Image 1 (tube, one colour):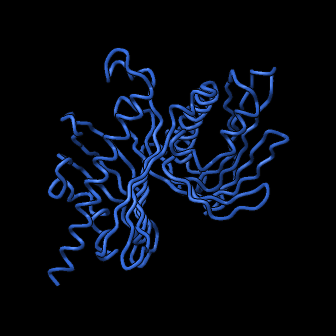
Image 2 (cartoon, one colour; image 1 turned 120 degrees about the horizontal axis):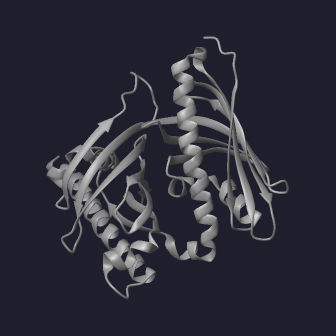
Length: 324
């Protein structure tokens, strides 16, 4: 492979918020999956003062890509630089920087710069990368602007919660039950439809498996919600996911299933992080309903379905053990 030409792009937006607020959103990469539409999952690999190595799964051009990056954080200069250590074709190399500039106490200018090379300088690869960079950059800048301008309201809209069950069943069977989401319509009463596609991996490759799925679920009030998700399945003890199509009450929903040793058995935990869509609260829940009402409604709906899945997984694993 030969790569020669480097391409440069710059995208920018004005944000009506303090520069340090904007920088904080850029610096906190762990929250990117629920805050930036293209990002599915961020896995921390290494962290030192002022620097970090991360692996990112994100959608680009309608497909899920992943890469490893190193980021340098400069809180005094309000700048974060990044460089991909391992890129995904057709990208041969990519880097760039986020730069925040204060234009007054509550006005900031945010620039996102990229430099990249395509594998073999292939023109179709250059076009694909350029389109993906343009689309994702504009999406991410708009998300930063919206989040930063929410100010303290973000703390009311964004929240996390989890549910846990304990089981004496085999952890491998629990993981398989959660991993085989394609069987959920047969196994779970609240799942009426589920279409799943999984990216193939080579023989002997220990890469996390990526699943893309569309699902219809019923809530306790009888309503049916259609969601689309990307799941990253790690080994035998963790599955993380990002809903790429969410119900009207949410603007973002990420979560995980984790299996950890606990006494003579295992603890199986479902965790959710949600950002509510405040503009949809009264339309969905009715007049005079508040964000607090929406928080309770969403948590109850998600917890009910998650707990149902956890209990069925436990019954599956413990039933297998009883059958010998």
